Amino acid sequence: MNQPTSMRHGLVTAAALVVLLAGLKAATPVLIPFLMSMFIAIIASPIVNFLTRLRIPRVLSVMMVLLLIVFLIMLLAGVVGSSISDFRASIPLYREQLLVQLAGLSAFAARFDIDLSMSIVTDYFDPGIILGLFANTLTGLSGAAANIFIILLVTIFMLLEADTMPQRMHDAIHNPGVRMSQVNKFLKAVNSYIAVKTLISLFTAIPITIVLTLLDLDYAILWGILAFLLNYIPNVGSLIAAIPPVLLALLQLGPSQALAVAGLYVGVNLVMGNIVEPRIMGKGLGLSSLVVVLSLIFWGWLFGSVGMLLSVPLTMIIKIGLESSNSGHWFSRILSHPDDLKKESEPVDEA
Image 1: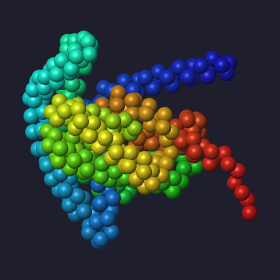
Image 2 (image 1 turned 45 degrees about the horizontal axis):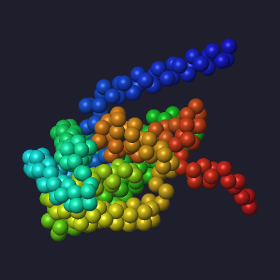
Image 3 (image 1 turned 30 degrees about the vertical axis):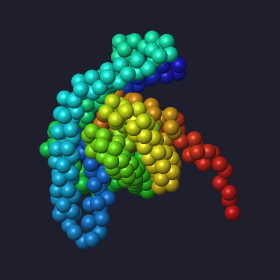
Image 4 (image 1 turned 90 degrees about the horizontal axis):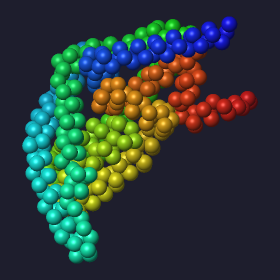
């Protein structure tokens, strides 16, 4: 009797999961503004808390931070919007520049009796298509930010009630085994992760923007903003951010300058990703590297580019929920970093 019951329970759980995912996918237009509000609120929360410690009323602190956010959004929207429009219009020109460079390459290869067909190269490698894909991605991010009024409204209420959120989460879990200290630890970890990621992204984007400007590469500010945003995406974000400026440098400035741009991205991300970030963040939020990559794919499929930006915090929310559940605790261990599991298995020395 136990085996059929267990199988029935598994099938019901799987069916419920499929229905849940289908519902989340269908509700994406509603959920994305909420997720963006959560993202902005987590970044702004430390500033609000700092102002409240200076005896400034919380409502006034939230309004001051909100004005700063609106100013930054308007500034970025103006820069990104005009750059995307000009960039999309220039893609045919870049394709022509590619054909000119390929003609020179074909003539050079002919000296060594190498038949380099331009049509074959353009069929398999067309930077215009790749650059257009990135333009569409940036347009998608701009579209997600179009619901700016709703996003800011939700952000205001999130910031106003942020100080009571730990107690509400503790009450919502309904598990005596989960203490307030655990909830506070989780919220602090997520807040710290996004705050550190924001600083690292900023210090990644600044040198990239400066050097690309000095190289006189088109849309240097746009590539700096792209480097800032995609740096939130774990592991692959920095690599993706490097592709369009390297291709553009190849078309606009030539192979040597494109190599210099590629070296710039590699150097900055090696320093920030492998030296600075680990020293500040330690082992992050206790997720294994495989889980980080898989969560990136899953949340990206579910919520698009916004889901990719928030893949780690969203996975952490699921992980803390599973840790508080007796039936789901085993799965939370699968998500955990191997070093955390080793610490749990080590015997505690008794004095």
